[in-house]
Length: 304
Image 1 (tube, rainbow, N blue to C red):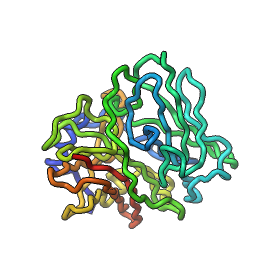
Image 2: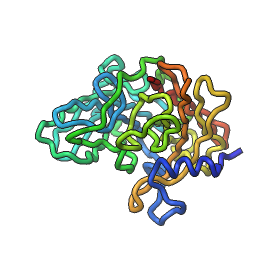
Image 3: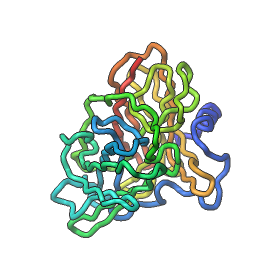
């Protein structure tokens, strides 16, 4: 059965993101209707792996990523790549290196590179791109969701990052994939049992009891011409939280500024006041209408 957003889900998401009720002519799936040559997913984290998108001048941003070849369904490793780097306006490119043990890396995102933000860098949004070319001259790129509060931002007084991030086990991607997936988490603006953060909808993988976890996700079906996963070809999208009685349904809808909004998948989890402290792994699972299933493991840390 294809998932249709319920009234409760729609209200929860409306409280969390800037989104409109209808689709404007420039609305489109994120990042585009199809991925042609290479699928790339990337995140920004601190040096200990804590997800964040707000950094101060002089601090260190770690970019981490993974990439998949849609036609062969293989995950890129060092021998496959001619170049893999981050392009930052008016800054030197940041080379990404394949090393799952590097600081900030994860089993799922083993390509990393660091950017030492200049102390004189002007605060504001940083519209970076991640670019790759394989030895067979296949190219791909990654850009951020166009939700300004969750985009990489250099701020004179950035929101405090509470870490360190989860050290929970995540299964590396080694086998051929039917679906290539991306997911991250941002703080919801209306937590049920905690004080709202100073800036809502910023990226994090460390949450307090009572806070609201919002999963943002997108992906492609590598078995169907690398088509983006949308409400038209997905039978079921949900996230599983260990300890909860049932999975949480995810919804497909528009987000971002009115003149640059895109569609992607979201799910909302309100962390209970008595939820166990420590590491927990969310599992975001898609099942397509043609029967293909894949799961993205996203580790979080729950603190008091």
